[in-house]
Amino acid sequence: MTTQNMKRDTQNNFSKFKQSRVWMETKGFFNAFVVAMIIRTFLFQPFSIPSGSMYPTLMVGDFLFVNKFCYGYCNHTFPFAPNIMTNRIWSTEPKQGDVVVFNNPKDEGKDYIKRLIGKPGDRIQMKQGVLHINNVPVKLEKIEDYHMVDQEGRFLVMPRYMETLPGGVRHPILKAQPMGQGGLDNTEEFTVPAGHYFFMGDNRDRSLDSRVQDKVGFIHEKLVIGRAEILFFSTSAKWYQPWSWPFALRYERLLNFIR
Image (cartoon, rainbow, N blue to C red; front, side):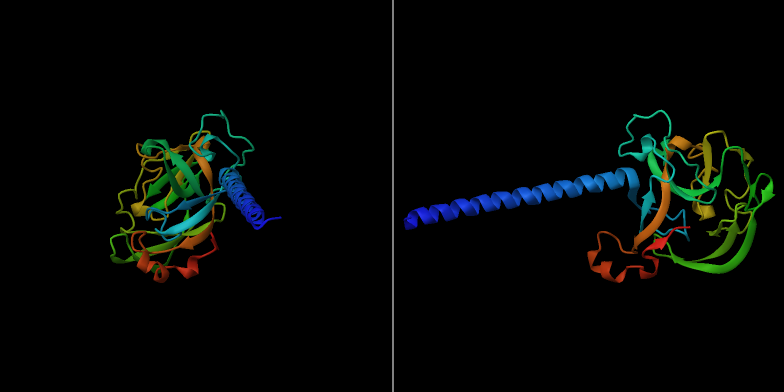
């Protein structure tokens, strides 16, 4: 074999190797993409917290996984909410106290995250800042104040209470205004219709939720996306300030279950 032939064979082999490697890498990327889409569509969806309505449970800059299979599947479970299902399938009813992501059609179809307070048939009312369920006030205990920095960079000290729902779920709430003086501290009695749920934020004076009927109101079961499950990342940094990222991680919040 001549030197020229050997050189040509070497070049051909190298070209085949490069083509094979490109194909393997493309195939690997495609397979990973398919697996990621299956996980996001049917199992867990990442979700970030854009507002302070769920303080102190969830903070702006928290990133979490939403369990999409725990309540079954509906149109809004899937990306772009295709109109392919008339009813929820493999449905399991959410529990009172669950932190839930749902779609709010009254706000341009945006996804909200709140705590489930009322189930079908429940009567919900706020009286002097105290939540009443079926005309019974929930247990409310004052605990230590909550120290926080809001989205405008202001340091705040807010009264914090431990609320216990009828089923035994205990969770903290914040009150920016004195009891009875918040804009939603006294409401009419809401009766949750069949097939709907009533949601509220833990930051009671700074949450747009089911208490505001023309903005959120009752949420149909078909609009429920899933249960907030695991808080996997948290930062106080702004995305456009990369130099601050390493120093803004909230290490104590990483890999926590959401309750």
